[in-house]
Image 1 (tube, rainbow, N blue to C red):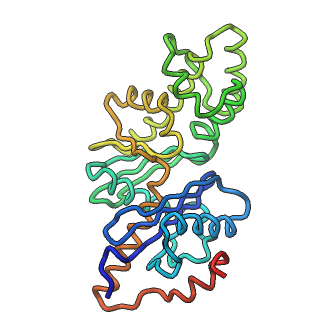
Image 2 (image 1 turned 90 degrees about the vertical axis):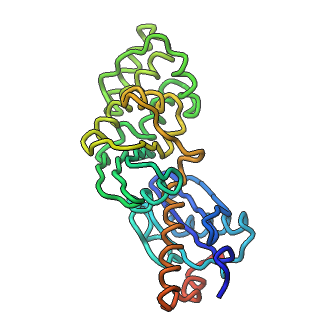
Length: 286
């Protein structure tokens, strides 16, 4: 049998707005990570990002021992050996990065979710996925309204000296309120800081319904926004942990779960999934 370090595992997180792939070796070392926007053709996208990850890792697809798919589009990853929910994968990924994590806040493009974690496993969760309020999509719409780039919002809000209250978190009404504030001559940085506060207050309120314990980890695309991170910390009253790359937690967790499943099978003398089926489903491999 090959040594652990020469075995490879992949996690594919096909999310609503972003698709991520992580490849690790048997020692848990990340060999490749790829992130791209999710398009309409999920199956084609899954093949494309997997191919990119393999090139980055300098590995042929035959060398991948196990592939786990997660995220909203996980059923559209044809070459996956198994599908696991994004909540389970996210919990595993978060605790691999921060073993002390007991609570996680994830704000992505279309939803926000809070997770309670114990021993690397999900014990409870709460989600807000009924509308785009307080998500990455919300920030995209507001940035466009302000004539700014999404990535500019964080630094701009940190310049605020007099944050204004934004009473609406509904995207449409918040957009109207922003326009009204601009017409009143309110500085852009104060408006953006107010929006970040509205997002943070909503997110922390969601976490409080779970019961906040231990270290809190903040992930998802919105965790890249320094202004939102600061607002979340102010609402919590303490620091939060943010990964260097807050987008890959789910894909990393999927790869780690694939590794654990494969190792358990090997220990029991059980066969691993046949690579022939996986290779046949990968259109980029043909």
